[in-house]
Amino acid sequence: MNVFADFQLRVGAMLEKRAASGELPRDLDLGRFVVEPPRDAAHGDLSTNAAMVYARETKAAGSNPRALAQNLAADLAREPDVLRAEVAGPGFINIVLQPAVYEEVLRAVLTDGGRYGAGARSQAGPVNVEYVSANPTGPMHVGHARGAVFGDALASLLQFSGREAVREYYINDAGAQVDVLARSAFLRYREALGEDIGPIPDGLYPGSYLKAVGEAMAREFGPSLREKTESEWLPLARERATDAMLALIRDDLAALHIAHEVFASERELTGADGGADRVREAIEALRVKGFVYEGRLPPPKGAPSEDWEDREQTLFRSTEFGDDVDRPLIKSDGGYTYFASDIAYHKTKIDRGFLTLVDVWGADHGGYVKRMQAAVAALSDNRARLDVRLCQLVRLMRGGEPVKMSKRSGDFVTLREVVDEVGADAVRFIMLMRKNDAPLDFDLAKVIEQSQDNPVFYVQYAHARVRSVLRQAQSVFPNFDLAPGALARADLSLLTDDGERDVMRTLAQYPRTILQAAEAREPHRVAFFAHELATRFHAHWNRGKDSRHLRFVNENNGKLSYARLCLVAAVGLVLASALSILGVSAPEEMR
Image 1: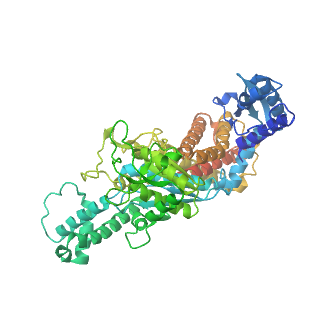
Image 2: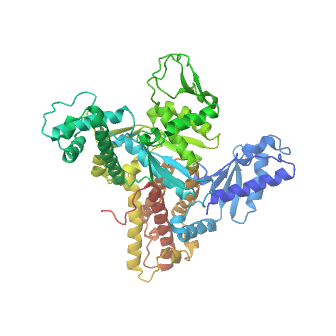
Image 3: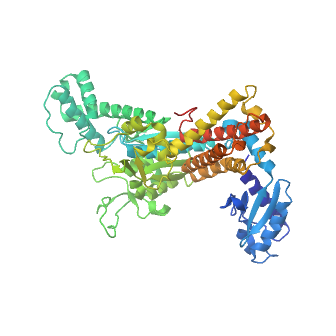
């Protein structure tokens, strides 16, 4: 039950009626107006800007929005579930609903349960959500957590909204960084054999996490690798090290309750493992389409670019799709550029039937977006769309003081250490309490505070409080059937207090929040909603501390208590739903 979508359709029908009569153009675009909560709840339950949007196109009313607004408000006032509709300001329409509307909202929550607010199954096709995709060169640090949590919550949000979503991880297991990892692991292998390796040379990974890899190689190969040339031992060390690091990364993600359905390998794309060269195939496919050519790039304007080489080279015509310059595909040494491999990888997504692609990247990759979107458009003949979501940096703090992170120095705080210290729920919720493209400070001390200033505690405590109230009610009224379906049959007209209505109004906004968050691909909106609902619920509970007649459980009035328990149960169901999308637990109790 989406009250806002319902009234969007009703206002749209009123506008269509005026278009049919000639008062408005017949080709009216009905996607330009909104029905939303008013900024001030005192103004009503719903507000629409329809008259403001279409007034200039109205032949009868000229360019006066209030004239069209008065006509629409009169039509709305005749709707049986509208108490009144009033014109405000230059032409906004504020709508006050009959109390019965919110009673139906409560019944919908209790009847639909965990599916309240969920979208119908979409026919738009599956969405590929690729996120994390960290280089397999060490354990994950807290900087990776934001993209991991964002991508995972986004996939859950899309699924709840009705879309099919697949979670995917791209393993960057080709290139120089993996060879550096192999040499670092080989050094630890020599150490495991009893050799004094001294200080870790510059340019190698110094982290102690590689000691276990070296020890495993020593058990497997004994001293035999020391007798081999680098060209012989390097591929063996690379395979063992990348496998070990990927296992470590999977464990780190599992600690955050994240599991990808698909892991795609860069090495497999390049044919390095003996398979087909998918990168070459992708380049040739684009060449056939006329988007790859041999040419020379002009020198960059302003600061020199690392990508620029003054030579004839193989280029992709990314400027035809809005990019700033055409992009090289093959390096001077004959190897593929990272961009070429990424083109091949995204081609595999399209070939697997995905026309809606979402990539979650770090903010430092912002300059890469246009060229990748250009490649997807060229590969798919503009049928597929790539939406890149950039996640800003996380600044790890402890009591207001920065905590260092540096994979190079080996002096970094791993994701697993953070999860072990504060818990997965705190990490996930706090990471989602800011929009992904806004910087985030994550304070290890603050996220475990048991106070209303800690949003994850505040929301989880609201759910635990719901469960506590229901347990208390069952002890006071042992004959009450507190199953949601039974509660839905209560006399909800008894819920007349302003605080109760405030909570009911907030519950009514959940389907709209889900729809808008999924369309905008912004799961933080769900976190914001959960916090708002928790705030409304806590506020009304606190009023009952001071005024006994407002308490949810009244021993002297079972009928009223039963109606209020409907409201309590509905809050619990919606909080649990929102927390589930965010990947955060909904506790039965908190101490």
